[in-house]
Amino acid sequence: MISVRQPFSLETERMTLRELSPADADFFYKLNADPEVMRYTGDAPFASEEEARSFLSGYDAYERFGMGRWAMVAKDDGRLLGWCGLKTDAESGEVDLGFRLFRRKWGLGYASEAAEACLAWGHRQAGLPRILGRVMVGNIASVRVLEKIGMTRIGPGTCGGEQAILFESLLSIP
Image (cartoon, rainbow, N blue to C red):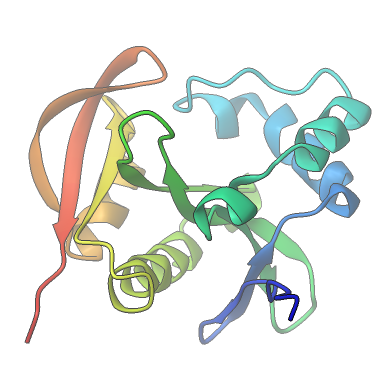
């Protein structure tokens, strides 16, 4: 019998998190085109919508690791807010929680809501014993998000080749 992988979907109070697809290229391109959004990421923006589509077409994290970065879709109007999710480093096997939102959605609690849901899913459904968070030095808002969702600051690290603050969340077994 052939097994077909079911697409990922996770619900929070105000949003649905779902897998990214090449159809999201316009959103992905526009999100990464904002210099303030990209300021603390270490990533370069896409040169075009087609480059974003190509990236999304080749994004195989869902098949390889059973998780990845997920589109954050507002329940009230269906608009894309940004992305949040768990990324597995292919070499070390470490899992990292990350998020990126359109600037107009900053400060409204969406990052915390999505990050908390992803963290809980990672521990409870995926059984991950340890999830990391890396925040570039100076990114106070993202530090607050990780602290708010209960991650513990464990020291200095790197993110995109830059100095960062390293956080972790450990699976607690009741």
